[in-house]
Figure 1 (cartoon, one colour):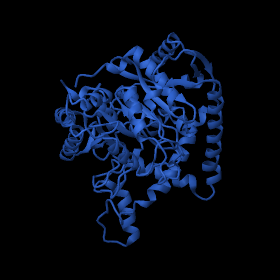
Figure 2 (spheres, rainbow, N blue to C red):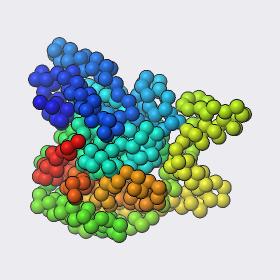
Figure 3 (tube, rainbow, N blue to C red):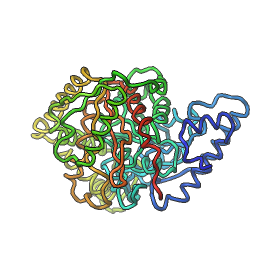
Figure 4 (tube, one colour):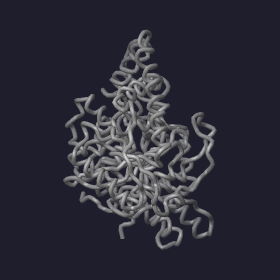
Length: 485
């Protein structure tokens, strides 16, 4: 039996029943990493010996009859912009290629408290700025469905590791689609929570007002289990919402009869691949067959979402990344000049081209004379977009749309065209601007390449989107299809 191929809920049951040991599960995962990692490049670092020791401790607790938690013995891969105490946290950048944080993110602490085992840090676009995982200092991650194509980004390593069975669960972060894009491209489940539901303490900041840490998994139930483990208020995060612990696995059972599903026409505009559109509309028909009431709706101002998002995100990035000066931590350029010359050389050599582009554009948008014209105007448009989502979600329980407008593309095919790369985020960034939750669930294949269905909910409406996604998954079983690597 290939234990690494099983789901979290299957393995937890087996581990607690002592049918298998946590150590065996971890061993199977690392055996798989040894087999395929040279082809996939999903991980920046792995922690085999540490993971095995933690697995043995879980097994000892079970034998003693002690409580071991919701994720007992389950291997979890963590995106490399989430701090892990005493372990490399690079953000996929040369700038932090030697950085070892002195503390762990709240989500990491919660996973370990629930019995989860951190097995490694996954590859990502540098500082989470990208949607293909091509901008990583550590090389591009490859899509397990087609090794010549991208896995999506920026959490591409986490998605690829799940698809190739190199992990059982994974964490990603989502600023403008960075969980949902790779979930769609790799045919896994990825959930971007409501802003404030999951603590951002220990997440290396890109754009504070937009980003959220979220769960990625092989199926919806596993996603709900991981969300249950990591959600909840954190006093160390000033943006954390005062929410009590909740078991999201309890929300997914039952049918979706009379659930009102809105289909915003603006998500099916020009630029959407006809084959993707066909798959998503077929998914809408399936939801109707399952008893949901589906109807068309409209969300105004979506033609402005991409410029609005990038103005805000780049402006916040310009401020956040000013802290990387080469003096306190991270990479320092070899330079004989004064502080200004060392600072300039460090940032020039330490950051990649895409990161530097976003810092420059963000600095421009915040500069005197342009702040009101660009950044402030973008904030006003963001408010309008948020209100549009609130109006639509007052009429419908959930909204559905394509996760990505196109299929996974070839490595190197679009990376030199930043505007095209930015426009690919058109279906995901509205959710981040509004702050609402969204999940991507596999909804089919086109020429052997995955397509994702995006289910969007109202504020703290994770239960509803999980319920709809689970009903769709259980009827279609697209999540069970696996690539040959």
